[in-house]
Image 1: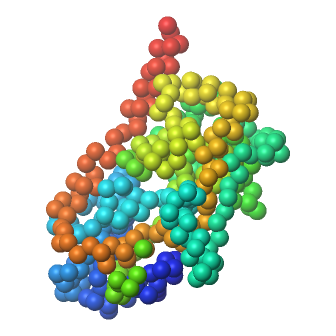
Image 2: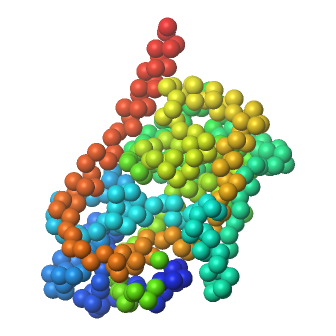
Length: 348
């Protein structure tokens, strides 16, 4: 299959899952979330020196396997972390871009002259009174399908429920109406969406090209909670270690880490809900952004470009250390620190 989602690269790279073409591939992408996705016999027989083996992973380290056996095996990384060779951020599923950027202006010109059929969507940066009046089901809601997880988010939400109303939807709560996207339903009926990930881990473009071939063993893409909620008229509340301000201004979301206790977080949410101007201020950043670029921001597009531009030899000595070391400190410590503070406050 061609890179149909990369308008400028469709003739420069090719993607295949045909095992018979392994030896001719310029890059081999392995998604390492499976128990054992690598056939060592195929590798030993068909790998050639200039081939790039790409470590691809969208799951956090707490949900992935031991990688000690892959020392000096991979050449590049393709993950959600910023230090990856190809950054495959969850942002890519719901990308947005500032209208002042050179890339956006280029896309406008190319869209007009080459008829790429790209559509750009403006998001309402100041939800109307009509939208606000429809938010009658409660203060905050969460959409959760994994009832376990290492982030202790359900325990956090249980504590939060002591002070404000919170509803859980998905496998771990009530069902959303079948005729509407669940996040859209929450945005229509609640003021805040609790965008709590299941794990708290770090950070959870011409004739120059000759055609490159990429062999995929298994590739998935996830649209994580934070980015999926930004296109809706609801304020995300986050619990995690990602640098959210790298993607949107800090005035566009509420970070639980900024509050010393769950009670102080609840008080702030309640205060913001009933202060119209304060609530609307969280949407102001959207004024100069557009959505609808999902077919341009994909890791495979970036991999195609890198294959043509980066010929430097590279080998990753210890992929296990790179992936695991210091990535997921337990959020339990954070949560119980907040509980301790509540107890101290109650008895003093």
